[in-house]
Figure 1 (cartoon, one colour):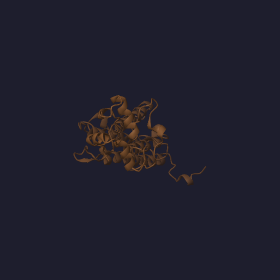
Figure 2 (spheres, one colour; figure 1 turned 90 degrees about the vertical axis):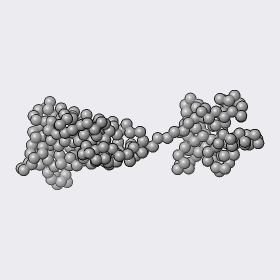
Figure 3 (cartoon, one colour; figure 1 turned 120 degrees about the vertical axis):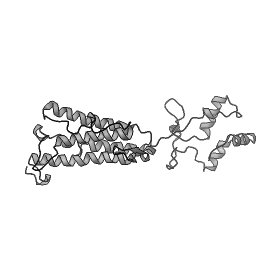
Figure 4 (tube, one colour; figure 1 turned 135 degrees about the horizontal axis):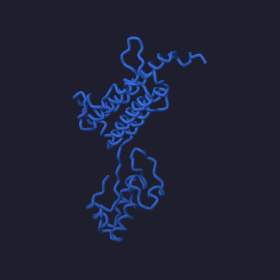
Length: 260
């Protein structure tokens, strides 16, 4: 319940400490955590930081405010300097952090399903190989994933100027599977991913996830849908690359059926 300045003056004139009265009404729970969903009280020594100042993440209680006012008003109870009371701010980013975790895992996680994991065992001749009736090489899939990261990021978080003719949207970057050419393609992919990840990480709070943003096909979609689509996209093509590599290397059986 907020304490208004006029209420504080009136109670002080009657000899009542308004902040202690507020604590009394709240059930004698003097040291309460900032997050009201967590009912466990914070211990007294946790209310201040290493320099002895009030920790702005913890809810203020009577003694905290009174000590602050005494310092700035030199003991006078009649002057309440609201600006001198430590401000409490909280930015909700829990959902954003989870999205960032999933972005990282889908792209380069240690598990077998990530995109980067499925590029590790490729031989140079695997990058441009095609199965019978196939039309898309592994190299083209990798270029496509990188191009889409750049395209989605530019339209959702940038100036929406990118077209498929842009060099950053090149979906057939690898023409010669030389060591230098393959490394250039890997760098193109990792750079595109880092750019998109930075754009997501720069979002201020979880409220941004519901904000409509532009897509490269001229529509709008919620930010969370765009992020989800890029995560799914990495995993989708990681699976395609896995199968292509297995066919090319003639080890397409289930892992438990492989001859040791």
